[in-house]
Length: 88
Image (cartoon, rainbow, N blue to C red):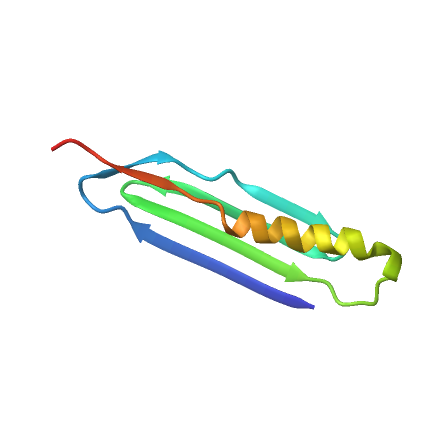
């Protein structure tokens, strides 16, 4: 079993504001667990990511499900938050 947890705080530079954030993602399968979330706390972006991989042997017939699990994680990890420059 593999477990990785990241918590990152990013300070928003003065003169910028958040225009759009990525949606929270939760994926739970027998192959593992993944979640990511972004939230605003004052002038900080708080990003949290949890990834767990289950140990075990899985039948070859489940290959497409396993590929989907990792593809969904790949896509979630590439979600973006958009900052725009404010007037002034």
